[in-house]
Length: 418
Ligand code: EPU
Image 1 (cartoon, protein in one colour):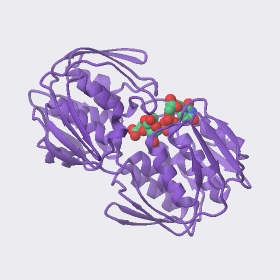
Image 2: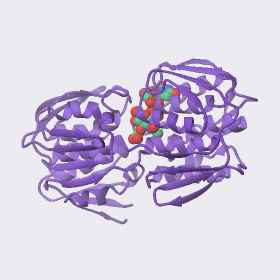
Image 3: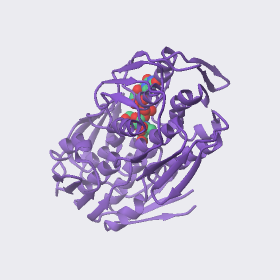
Image 4: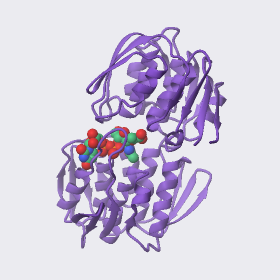
């Protein structure tokens, strides 16, 4: 298994270009199933999760053409409606195939995603919404087996805002008969990116970005071209990298309005931040101040940046309280950070970090995607020797060319093949 080695302690300086967003690309590639013809997607990041999506969709009969970061998708000759366990178990977002398969074929058989390192992560709200759209759903030997003659519009209230749940049902409703109203929806920017793509195919959607989305079903859609939005979590990770290494980084090709909650916390921590249209400049402070955060659905502080922010608080002066409200088990990075000298106490969904002003290098193990990023950040600032981050395959699921981008910013970081 590959590992990443870091010799920390260097301030990172220079410019980094942000890649396309994984969590926007995944539903958008799935939405290409809605109609035949060649769809052309730009700014698609090279990531393991994108490869997994392509492998699953290839099994369905979808054909891809790949050129740099442009991906063309054609589903003229679908031959299957089944997403098998061996692939779904490696990527929960495979559930996003349910909505488009039902919209196009009225049938889908998808392995029920299990829990994962960060929590139980049920899909009950996806299924409940589909049932109210007329879908017959049964669970059989670990598979979701879903069938419908034609999806019908419905009034759906999500008990809790769910990102992929909103996306799945939005995609399904695009071709349903009549009007679908989704309430208490997630407001993440990735949902708006998907809605923009669907509208360019001819869908009738309003309200994305708010908590109520109204969709009027249409009979015909056309293939489209779309550019995937920049990855706000990658941008946020580099912003924290600038702060933690006392560096000075220009983060280019991002959307400052997508990282507002992080800016609100990094400034009181001492970072100097300037934004222009698609660029954020972050200069790290000499002394990082402690700040409390509470993760929330967008526009709140993203759970996907909680681990990285915790690393920053480990080297702050003072105590900081981090509350995780989105997932029930998203503190697995804590025991690894402790191996690097961090002083963190966990009490249920709260973590109290007693910042010491430093971390020490150590061999550590990545446990999920964002936890991996937090350990890389820890390695970039750690004193006395080399940090070795093992099980780096998690990182490859969601960060495009991360170590190359850090090398360009002056970090001493490399990958060892294992
Ligand atoms: N939930 C339910 N029932 C459902 C669906 C969700 O109870 O049917 C609960 C979840 O257990 C959780 C909360 O609702 O407590 C929110 O979960 P959500 O459904 O919004 O998460 P998701 O759609 O599975 C996406 C991202 C995650 C990100 C979360 C929260 C994708 C492919 N994944 O997951 O990204 O953390 O939203 O913003 O978009 C990552 O990129 O590292 C990652 C984990």
